[in-house]
Length: 404
Image (cartoon, rainbow, N blue to C red):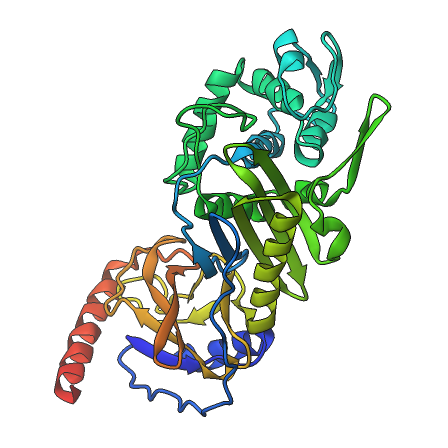
């Protein structure tokens, strides 16, 4: 069964329209809602940047708004530490470590070159301080200390990093260390790093606030966050800088204005100032010409189709995640949702079973697709109920064939 319904101006109106309009019996005919032409925002081409590779992504919908060489494998420098921090946050969320746990600092961690938090051999430093040192001041010493604490050494930790990169869909990434210091076969891409940043923001929001800190002090030494945009743009609240001679100047940033959050990745610029300016161009473009709408809440009931042979006759169907869509500004009146429901639903059905798809259309273009799932369990009915439904289903299909 395919059902079209219009999507209104706001998420709240969207939900109400779908619940009222879509819950129709199986086999019913529906007429697509007319689309009223609206004045369209003219969207220029995305800006061209003085960088090797870049991407602009919406953090909620995942839509890519601009990109250039975004799948090119490049040295990520200290952007590597986004994965290091992500794995620390993951273990904190799982409860295997705590912020107050004390970490022994090895000579190996202390000797690590490059940017430092300035921990000392034999010190015991809290996980909380080390996580701040990794994120805010890009401490290589802190990164190695946490790698040793979580995995027993940097080599096994790099193996963990790669396993999770695969799990997150980072198919053009390979890590050799926890710091981003130059190493053969150590690479990532703008696209992969944007995906990782999306997970950092959405998976562990309780820790994301650290990425917005402008300074960090440890052992009497004050150091600034190298992300210049934290001072220049109040909407920017993360994420990470990187630099090596091989990689150039890199920056992963995120900014939120109203209900829209964007992620930008810029790799291979020629200066600290350039990476900030080029990032600002991307963010300005995204916020000026696009908007993000939350169309449906997780668990919202979008349809109640007929189920055959069950202990109840109708199944509540919806989405198992929030549905966001990013689209050109001033075109939300053209949005329509189409529900493609499996035509012959039979019990038993379990919560989470896929029963169709939700398509979101902008005019004639499909701009998004999500699974439709069962929001409740339906058990098999008794023998009499199943026999009765078989007869009813036979005549329903017969009538449907005649009307077709």
